[in-house]
Length: 242
Image (cartoon, rainbow, N blue to C red; front, side, top):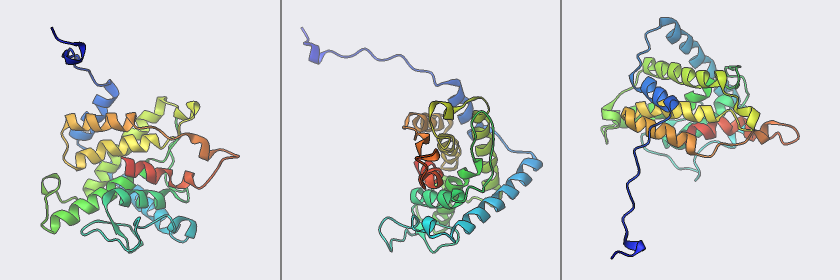
């Protein structure tokens, strides 16, 4: 007779993903952006967002947060941070790019049930695209099947990230329960970066579910009397977590 410690647990029944996760993964994986207006709009957003980031480099409160954890570290074929000499791993690169983009709070704003700045997602998209391109061109380990991203690809991923974050914000007010809106940056960036890295649709669903499971930051740092500089680097933090 088996003791309780030796007994085999009954296998759990397969669990279905929430429809929202299924829809986001399907959209990120399968949808083809064919709208010329969407791509042209994304091009303007791309230029504006980079401009916001470059302007932020004039402020030492921002630049002191940038660069590698260990001064002088350079990652071969890594992510370059626009306007600086830093070449970082793509995770820290996403934080750096996301931080400069959002620092001055000038990049695009979407006001719905939940407000936010969908161009924050460029921090993750650009960091991954640059790292993948440089690594694959250098002839090292082929990432995402050796993919070389074009600016058109980056614009298409921006469109998808804008749509995912924007649609989620239409009817879901996370600020009403004290959560910061950058959680949607993390979810949207995870969705598109998963596709950039060559994940399957099923793996993308897994990744998105982890973005939701991961603890979300509270809005405390956005409201008086607790307002602090974290509100300016929170989007960079969301990009690197994605």
